[in-house]
Image (cartoon, helix red, strand yellow):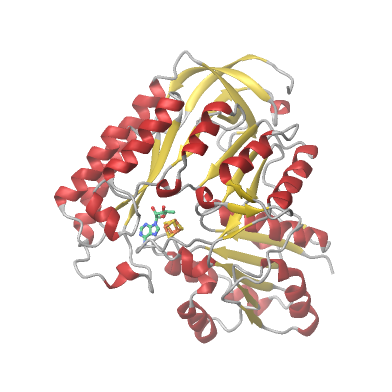
Length: 447
Ligand code: 5AD
Ligand code: SF4
């Protein structure tokens, strides 16, 4: 029987990459991807627990599938990802959604082919959610979203236990991949035409790989090794924890042309007291010092961040420290979050939860400041010429191409879709809040 699959991905780039790997494995099994959920008979929902109301939205979407599952004998519904690593979600699934065929977690994605085969041959319902990773599995295929750029895991899990965050519970402890395995994967990608790699980990700065000879390899060292791979033109990473950002890495920013001059450096709050209650292990001053050093080494570096508004006990004064931080750093962009309770995290039981209306009012003030600064910074790009890696036609308009600058700014410009995957020079004509507009000035072959 011909089988088509569809994967719905919620959440971060880590999840996006997990979905690419699942798609790769399913294609190796002979299944084909479907553009729409209704065209597919294997449906996978890759869930995230970080976003607000994630549970509600997930169960809402899942509920809509019940009717189809009853009508269509050959339909297989699978759910996976971070939410499955939480016991209360599994309990709800068992009680209210017993028709779901396959439930697996973040640690056993590589088992998808075997689990799926069992579901199909036995018509069994399977729940397999190990709470810890066994060995790291290497060599899994991936079906990439883009031809010219790729996501590459360098480590899994997180040891930081920020008091608001569920990730250490859903993704387990930090594990660094072997440098040789990472380099081999990237060499293969480069041969396949990939020009830009995004190195992924919850906290890439604490990467500590061990090579076959038993030597420890730092994150900075790993980047230098990746930069030697022919064909790779750009290296990025996500996410880095400010407490672990080393001088060695700043030096690589200064000296390695291939390392993009852009960093995502989540600050979460501008108040030292709140940072400490979040268990972030830095202060307002030490964070600002890192920013100073980065800018001293690389004046044009772009900086983005994550900010949480309304952490339990946050006073108006402490919130204003966050506003002052944003004004001082002048972020190129920021992801802003309303604090919301994650069951099982320390902050969930803190007294002094902030009322919703107060959170929203602060959030709005923060977003208008963040957006104003983004627009001001982007306006400064007008007239500049930027090297852009073309990702393809833009989502909104097929006559427009979309690509990214070295500093990770999204640029839209008129051009032929055949430029997809190439580097081009674009003159920036307009800087908007979330993107730049430009004019193609010269066609260039790949270096
Ligand atoms: N409430 C609000 N935002 C959160 N984040 C993580 N956990 C929570 C929470 N409980 C945000 C942080 C993190 C980003 C990925 O999600 O800012 O950096
Ligand atoms: Fe969550 Fe903190 Fe780990 Fe990031 S560093 S994943 S916010 S616990």
